[in-house]
Amino acid sequence: MAYIDPAPAKNLEKPKIKAYMALAEDLGIADKQFFEVLAHAPNYAEALFNAMRQAYENGGVDVRLKEAIRIQLARLAGDKYFALLRSKKAMKAGLTEDLIEAACGDFENEPLFTTAHKWAFRYGYLMYREPAKVDKAFYDEGKAHFSEAQIMELGNYMTINYGMQVFIRTLNLTPQN
Amino acid sequence: MTEEDIDEGINNYEASDRFSDAEKTALRYSEYMASDLDKIDEAFYDDLKKYYTSEEIVELGTYIGINIGFHTFFGTLDFYPMFAPDGRLVSQEESKLIYGTTPVSHTEGAMDRARELAPDTAAE
Image (cartoon, rainbow over all chains, first blue to last red; front, side):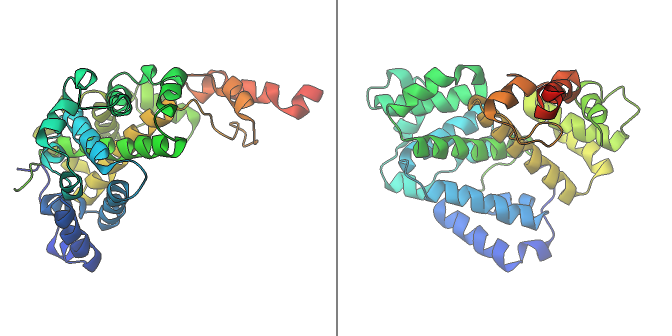
């Protein structure tokens, strides 16, 4: 049970919150509980969900790779809520539970991943475990596989997701389904 | 708020008389979220609720979380503030000289270095 009680019904009934709640479940990137907590501050709920949705849905990086990184980060943060959710778009595009497990485990030795994939998983891991290792040489290596726009997309995607994951982890949230 | 308040809030908030119990709890929330997540449990939230509404807790929690995410990312990109502590627009090279390569207090040399590097001062 979450450590914060659900937001008042009047907040959850706000048209934009209701629309985002339905969209989140359609996309598989959050559920009602997320809004029950975040809607205590409706403006924050709207802004953060919109940022998360844009990060999932838009950009030039493969959605399967981004989803695997998101789950990798959720596990690093110890956040069971976001670790258990799955983007329907990514799963429909071919992401599997085996690939997710590989991304969260020994990705360096996984033959199904390209050198680019491995760099991206290393980026996620090092960013929040050993950020000093994400230096100029590391970025130069990344530029061999990704454009600067894609690297910025990955970096910003990781920050939004990890930031939300560390907060949600502390609230003891678990997905409803 | 002063630079001394910021330094005290980072380095000595628990023992400081500059902060209320509510402010100390919020600063502890931030510190634990960045470095000791296991300490933020139900009892910790009960403590927060003594001082803050649920709306304020959500505001604080998301604000802290997103800042942890972005600060870590920006820290890897090796870029520096566009402005010196006195508000002067500076180059990245000059900003690096003023602020140094790791985050430190503005009172530990950054303001002095900004004054030393300011064109008017250098010309005198």
